[in-house]
Length: 635
Image (cartoon, rainbow, N blue to C red):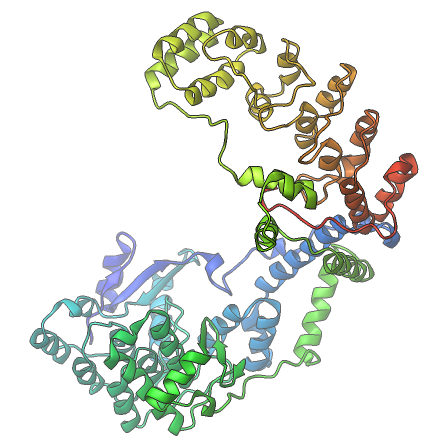
């Protein structure tokens, strides 16, 4: 009996070794990585949110996007918890289930499941099932996520690449090589083909299926691995021993593996190793003569592209011409693969669609989801803004200088986006001095701000470091503002963002210490901007009660723009009507940029737009008002 390597947790390793004497490997597998891993089926029941469904004419873009996102998440969860193996037991074909999995999940899940089923009776699969049964008998309570598998390759083969030719040959002669061992050896790039051919001599059935195992190997036959890795002598030897070419309608064919290998050599610039490149081409030419097909998205003189699960191959016009002229290889003559045909009307698909539809009604009714799809599609088709990179390139091509001002002429968000991407003109530098920090913050905690300031002034820090301590100390007590501003740490221009973040909700108390609320900070921000961006209604009301002036900003977004900007991830339609009356009480000048935002609001939130313009008719966007041309990826 072959002696197996056993790697099992604690004493179970010794028990299994002496009772089975199999070379096995016990490996914990995360359930999330396994398509058919056991899952708590109670989680399959989605929360019943149907009572929250809106009347169709009240649907808006944001709600619809959330509805469709929730529906998509539920669909993925439902599909991930399907017992696909059970469908096979019920009589559905592997092909139909493969296509259903690809439709509801993705091609990788489908390929993994299909390979596992096709390899159900492979030698490695049989051994692994036997090992699992033996371990389960010994330890009935063994968790399902623990798998016991035969080690591939055999432990003594793992370091074969480090041996010299004579030692490696001796090792192969003294080792009973399995088909899965050889499959692993084929992937070791440094091993010469003479060694591989020696190992191949031990394989009787070259058409035996490779095991699935812990690596979830989707390659079906040895010849596929050899074709991918450019082992031309092994490919020829396999064919001489009667190896059949793989022609699975969903997983990779032998030709597809060979093309993927050729693509890899182009991408890795392996043309410098002319012999390796020639071997790969020789394999493809041989397979072509035997009629091995491949899947193609395109196959012309300009472009050859194709794919199979987890692999892609693509060759441009220059590469195609090079292969034709230098190596007499015409990719266009490779036969097309006859793949599986998806039928949405099949009995399996109809049953699954019905089950899924019942689940989706817990998110929203079918009519609501259909209406939402129309709304989201319409908005996404009508509004296709460009980013900063597009407009900077456009201005440059037009011979114009890229500045905040020229970008602002297109849209104010571009001016702010440009500033966001520029180097910080008011840097803050963290000082890595724990002793100094402990002393300073200790004084601040004891309400000894003068002592804290004295320590910092004696330390003779740079401006960026002083700025860091200024805002950190301000966070201890708003009353520290005056002594800090009359010290070496004083700030000629404040950063309202840093001020707000450091004072943790006590910004109003700091402002009351003597900050001029009408003054803009170093970046041109107003305190009104901060109130809108941070959704601080209390701060907004306070500023208005103190008779703050609406900022007369020439460049960049103003508070009204910030409030109306639906592209900002912080935009909250439910709060807009709460903030809008306060901003409008300041009588902001209505600019074209505001009306563009209102035109987008009319498209996205029809009812909200109607409510806004009924109260503030000056915000009505003309019917022909353009939509905002730009968005910023930083917001």
